Image (cartoon, rainbow, N blue to C red; front, side, top):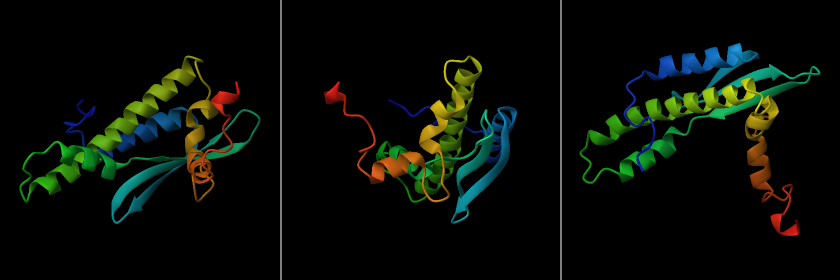
Length: 148
């Protein structure tokens, strides 16, 4: 199966701006960009929930994972291939994140889900996401399906 958006030519900056616009329309009260080695790796934002609780969310775009998946599809890479694929992986990873965010916000708008329900894995405590916390503890907080 081919990766979705693997040929996207949309500049990363435009895709990220669209994600920010969607999040702002959905009620984000602050948006921050996180960089590593000069590359954008995540968008973080705050949202106030009904009842007044403020929640921080961190949405990572794993361009390294996309790069790895793309490189596996290249039979005989040339010296310049990796650089071009690295750039494409950045565009593709953020375009995938845009698609995901737009679908999640559509589900919320259609009352198929609520904000916490779709963004819970990405709730950020300043160090780790909720998903990372669960994973670090071998998912012990999750119910065991064999018990039901």
